[in-house]
Length: 211
Length: 211
DNA sequence: CAAATTCTGCACTGTATGGTTTACTTCGGA
DNA sequence: TCCGAAGTAAACCATACAGTGCAGAATTTG
Image (cartoon, rainbow over all chains, first blue to last red; front, side, top):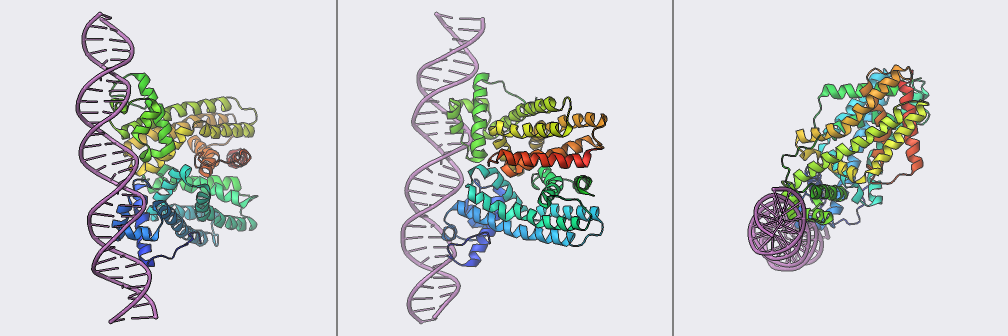
């Protein structure tokens, strides 16, 4: 629901090939050095066709970013639901959840490379567009996690005042920590180290929020 | 101590003018779209002079990045020492410290714009160079904070096993949270909101680490 | 099959950039 | 005062890129 399509120009099949290729090339090269020619080649499509579907390079980038955000957000929502639907061992469940969430970053390398590009260009992206992306992506992940924590708290396992804040803190102590050290997956980190960080993060979270 | 100078070519005054200008332009434009011509103009210096001092654009960028890291790290070290040397009200002192630390980001806008650029290019920066930057910058900040927390813990105000980990968690819950929402200062955030985030972060930190 | 839409390939424009060269000037120390 | 190191301005080169125009091939649709 994030990507508006004011034009239904062109064959949808080609359009998907283009966005797919664009995500890859933008992710690999960053916005500026990714050439439209390279994207066209990667998509197996004429450059002219790209300009048939998208007004210009910038629109292409933003559309791809929003599309990817939707996709990854859906995947993360699944992870949240899978691990947090029913709780048996709170600490272990939170750790497993966070590890899977971290793994999602490496499962969508193109997308998160693109995230890095967006963060780099943040100052040059129009405010409303940036907000649309944040809402479609990172923000939605939080809004999905919060009610689960709320429910766990209602069951008497946690003491939570503001569920969204708790969700933010859990995310910071685990995923954000790992992402920061790996530059969103650009630099490898030993699984044992990831595990250590996540475990420590969950433990701190629980010390703060456990009853 | 981070920047090696294999060449002492040229007048140091010019060199400083160049790095100063480069930091500004790289910060404003990002690596790729920052042109050497623009840097030369900003520095009030001939383009040839730049190539007299630096092998190429990439070396210039990296030198500037390392130089800035040293500078900002020193400033942050001061903030740490100022607020955490003696503790009167632990919660308030940690909040004041974190707020000042956050303010440092907006106090060095050029530098942190450059940080965004580095994070974006992380995948394309040679591993050792990236590591050198992390060590000179973010890493040093942690290593500076940890002993203070250790000392506070020894005084019986906190219960800390791993001081570096505690430092990491405090940083995540306050500065990183704000930085993430503001894209390192690229997007403005109301001071009241900053204050709210930092306060909540410190409180969670204390709930986890207070005796 | 026929018409309309879309895709393709390619040439082309205009602009920008990193980096070099050259010829000339400035400036500081001996 | 003189000399050499360093800086300056400008032209210059090769490359690259965004975006357009166009004629014809391919594909869809009726």
